[in-house]
Image 1: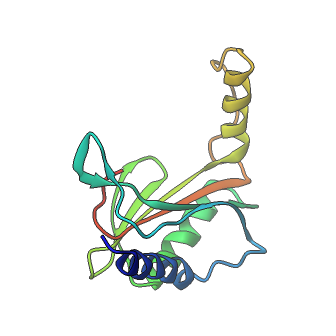
Image 2: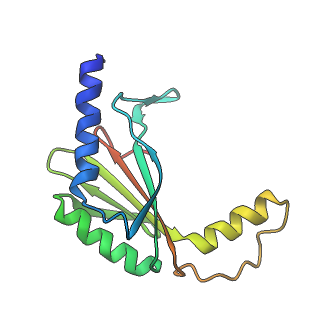
Image 3: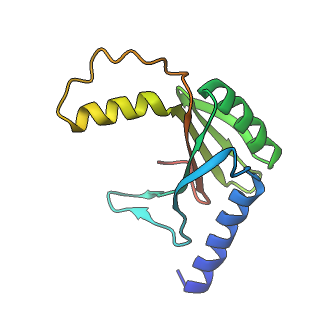
Length: 146
């Protein structure tokens, strides 16, 4: 694919993120991996990688999910499934996809820290709805595979 096409694709992906109009005082940006080239998986060319942005939101998981479901729907994406707890999938009329995942940052951090310190992750008793929330928003122009 040409560099011009990659730039057009990247501009469209950025336009989708911008259409969400996330307030960066509420949704604190953490990481961004946005690209325009179609990155097919080496092991399955029918699937491609998604661009992604992550945020932290000072609210519990349920509140954050409800708010973002409304925001994404308001940007022209229709909700169509929740294949995993707290992961919602949306599609535009143009066949573009958003994958939203929201989880408890406290709980995620506890698992991550204990695992990387060589400690047992069993018995961690943190409410999966506890705030703040970790938010991942993935955009894919080609498919809903990832």
